[in-house]
Length: 239
Image 1: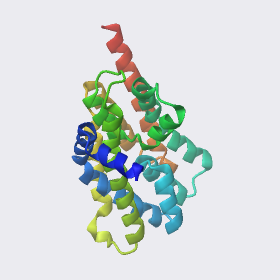
Image 2: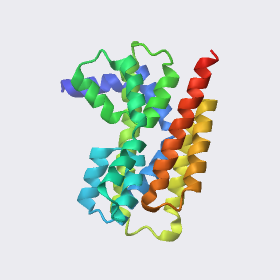
Image 3: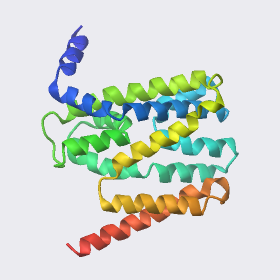
C-alpha cells in the first residue's frame, strides 16, 4: 500500500509529468524502432524466449540491430564484440555527464539509472538541465522519461517478436525502422560539430559498404570519432 501511495505521489509530481511529456514527443519513432528490432531478432534466428530476454536484458536498439546481422552471418566473435563496443561507446561519454548529476547517489541507484539511461533520456534531460550540477527534481524528471521510454520500447519490441512471422514483407517495416532511426538521430544533432561527425559517419559507411562482415560500421565509427576529436581540439585552441 505504501508503495502504491509513493507511485501516485510520483505520478502527480510536476517534474515527473514534464519528463513524461517531453519523452512522449519522439515516442512514435521509438515505437517503430522497437517493432523493427523485435522483428529483426526473430528473423535473425533467435527463438521467441531468447529474443524477449535479449530485449529486456540488453535494452539497446542500435547495438541489437547492429549485432543481429553479424550473428546471422556467422561473423567471428571478435567482430561482433568490437562492433557492439564501438556502437555503445557513446554511453561512456553519457555516463561521464550523468555523473555530474547523479554521482552523489548510492551505487545501487546509480547502477539502476544506467540501465534505463537511453539516448533520448540523455538528450531531453540535458536540454532541461543544461547546468551539470545536482538540483531538485532531476531524478523525478528522469523517472518520468523512463516511464514512457522503457514501456514503449519493450511493448513494441515484444509485439515485433510475437508478430514477426505475420507481418507481410511488403509493409516495409524495415524501411519504417530506418526512417524512425534517422528521426531519432536527428534529435541528437544539436551543434555543428555533431553534424560534421554524422556526415562523416554516413559518407564512410557508404564508401566502405562492400567490406565483409559489416566492417563498414567500424570504419564509420572510427572516422567519425577522429573527426569529432579533431573538431573539438580545434575549437578548444581557438577559445
